[in-house]
Amino acid sequence: MKKSVSSAIAPIPSLYTACIRIDWADRKHDICLYDLTTQQFESSVIGSRPEAIDAWVEGLREQFRSCL
Image (cartoon, rainbow, N blue to C red; front, top):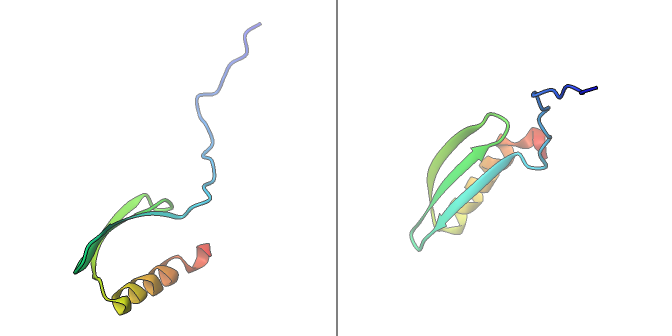
C-alpha cells in the first residue's frame, strides 16, 4: 500500500530575524538588510564615523525590538 506524501511543507522557524550585508569602506558603508519576517529588502548608506554606526545599530534595535 502506497502512502501519500503531502507536498505542503510547514515553514521551519528561523533563529534569525534578518540578514545584513555590509560593504565596509573608509568614508561610507553600504548596507543591505533582508527582513526574514516580511521578506523585504532594505538598502541604506551610513557614514563611517562611530556615531553614525551607533545610530544605525540603535535603529536596528528599535526596528527589531520584539525579536530580541
